[in-house]
Length: 333
Image 1 (cartoon, rainbow, N blue to C red):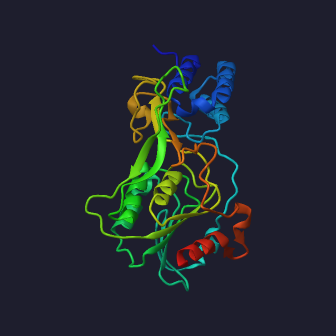
Image 2 (cartoon, helix red, strand yellow):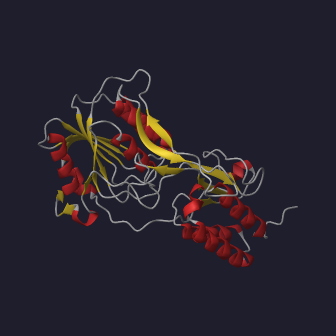
Image 3 (cartoon, one colour):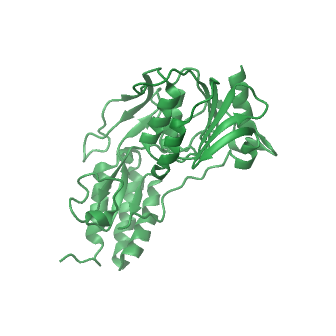
């Protein structure tokens, strides 16, 4: 019978899983060495799952990667790494620029006051639980305007499939276009053994309507993860411009592994199931690729630099949203 109060085997499984699966280990080896020392030094004092969950979550923040996530049996997380970023968005200030608009969950869609021919789309996240809102947006009859502001300054990520759904609704019949470059580990023992650069494309959906939006994409330090994938995808569309501040710099295609129960740290598991439903007490999320821009610049830690940079501390002045105003100027030109 398993000793559920001895957390050393779980800890060694976690360490082994990260060492074999973590794509960014090639740039996080010093941090991972510290994580191993901290975990092994502190695990002997742990006597229950709740304390273990908190302890491990805290230590994993040393990897400085918001995509390393540690879950308990119910699929809950207590802490993940958050970078220190300045905000370049004030919702009330931005809403004052809108006239007619509709909202559903994280999506705001409508027109700008006193500005002809430009529509506004704000997306706060791509979380799976908001799937109904994205279906609502896809089904909306879009205005005839061909210029659009897409605001993802608060978008901290979510589902890649929802990103694709929105991108294809804006892409129309155009494409394919190269969005980004990716690399993956080829060795479970050597974190520096990577595949060659492989392009990722955006492609039109079958039966897409013909549309040719000229797009200004608003980004900032809080644009993260799938939000950054979305920024890449939109920037690949001819005529698009990124405006704002450098993005958060944390993009990953995650895999999720059990740390106990059946097949621990071996087979990636379904994101929709809680560890307890699969006979386990803990699971970990681990990035499985390295993502680069079209010019082969690594996004992790660095972020995406916009075409037009407006620093976060200079983006909101009283009741003016200078990022939004600059995006309007770009679309008018």
